[in-house]
Image (cartoon, rainbow, N blue to C red; front, side, top):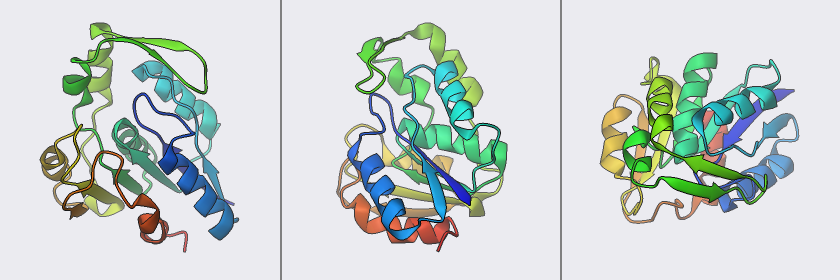
Length: 188
């Protein structure tokens, strides 16, 4: 059985709209692929530990990540050498998160996470630029109100990038891209 991983963004969860749409699509269309959608803690070390725990020593065949999950998906793709689909991915997230220090409650884990300056160097340690750009599909919307899509276009230059005019950080119309995502991941 093939293994896929979906990573949600900051202050999100496995119950986000994109996570649920992805899980439902895989269940209906790809019963031969196991899709993991772990709930990630909001701190870098704990998020990586949760990803490793979910993988349980297995290598993913592909990873999909949204926002900060896209940043983490890049780390996973580089570590395991698998294809990655990134949806409005965060680039150098320490710069953005440094403006949002505080306590965040995870809706599924029912835990509070303190995001502070001490964690920003840990995020920088996880930064990866693609070593094999052909393994990446980057989906961007220019109307993203949280992240500047042009930073992702620059960071992921050489990768397959699709920039849609308009939209927002949630990536409007995401469900319509699932067939293309599955094809890129070589599951169909």
